[in-house]
Image (cartoon, rainbow, N blue to C red; front, side, top):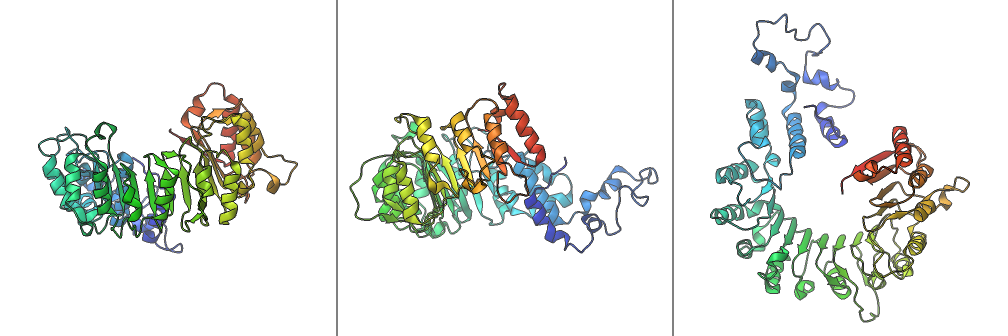
Length: 483
């Protein structure tokens, strides 16, 4: 199977091959200038006496440096499966890879990153504890990516947990779906047991909500908060009141889909001195007392509010000098966002409009007013999520007028547009895209369009599809997304 090298892989290969003035890759792989087209290449007819194994040894793949071969293994296996979803099996691609030849086996075993991500246990999947121990042995102490996403338990579950807890010093990225046994094991550990832990996702299932209490949440928080290495926390569990009284020394990213009212959002932001990215997936607007001054969060670069609720009161209470990315529903008072940006002195570059709210009237007109805010002038990435449809009115307003200077247009610096749902007449959307396409070498104008897969199968979009296909041939990057 041919491997298409990505730009990242090419950058990784370049130092292994040599500088630009050195010989090309082919001559590096074969010191004697192996050439498939030359008379000096292996001629099967001439070497008819050689067996298949001897010919195989001469194959170019065996001339690759071990470092290059290892990189190919990593990129290939990452595409074959999501290693956080399946437990190790005897027919796993990693095991099959080791059975090709001794050299491939040696290279694969020498790369801990090939073995360092998998579920801690899969109930009912004929788990082989010997394979788990083999995987852990081959990680050679490298950071582990583990998914404790186990529903239920069986007679080996306790032994599996004990095995992985004994390797807690390797945990780097962990997802835990709470159940009584995993909770008990987790609470037995101390912060010093996790010297490498950087990313944690704690969640519980709705069917288990009566099995855990806020006191359980408090205990877990008390274990996590002191960890100096923890920088990314997703918390889909009860949010204890004392979370804001704890010190989070290095937490840069926080996300939750639990319901949080305006005051709780402000408390969370206040207790995270180094927070850069925060996501409120269950934001609930709730009136708060008027504060004498706004709360300044100097390091926050990305604020995401996924909700139908009005975020205006939250905007009015914050000053965010580093804010560059915003995901939010349209506030009922659009000026609240304008004031936030002006007060903060920041430059917004990435905007995602997630919803309009269920209680608003004249939604299309109000969205038009929203996208025309002056604080959006320097936006480079514009996204409308599945909750917000693109209409003819919005598409026409986003269409550039060729008679006007580009800097006087709406969103003059946008280079990426992503639309998930459409309510436009065939041809209106593609006309908007065409007006913003100035060629791949122009410093401004559209460069990338991200569209859902179902857009291309819609029978009433012949004009849009034909136009976009033509723009793609001209160099516009068009990405099909699966939602």
